[in-house]
Picture 1 (tube, one colour):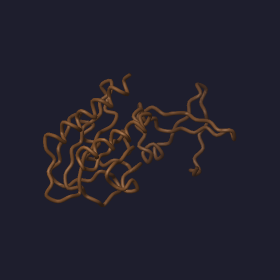
Picture 2 (cartoon, rainbow, N blue to C red):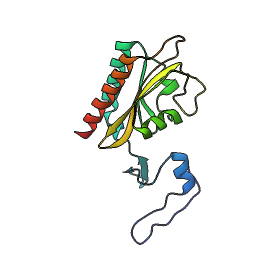
Picture 3 (cartoon, rainbow, N blue to C red):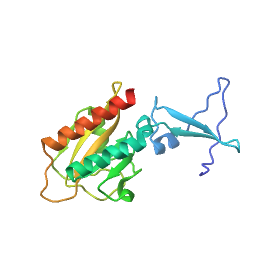
Length: 178
């Protein structure tokens, strides 16, 4: 754990203000849910809650299935990071902050096919040749995305990849709602 040097007092209603710099760095927005953990040493830990993160193993298996069926890189992301990867080195993508392209698709709540090169993660310098990104919408809110992509030149994403990404996103959304 890293000390920030910032100290805040608890107010009379039991509230603590998380400084703007930390909220910006951690990408915590107004209304975002936070999980609260405690440990034996008396530390209180706040962690961004990822509802899709609870499907971790299941999401990983789904990404593996998509990769086996299509032969393309398959990823599943929550609102901030890529939580499962199949068909690419996990070091490259797993737990990395998603790119603005993926964020925009989630905000627009519509599947998008990128036929031009695009980035998947924020801090990455690797462009993927093309991609299909389908937002996962649970209870009316975008909670993540299914991403099918490739680095191979001359490959285009078609109806099959789009339908599979959309189906996966719909299925994962239903799993979260139940």
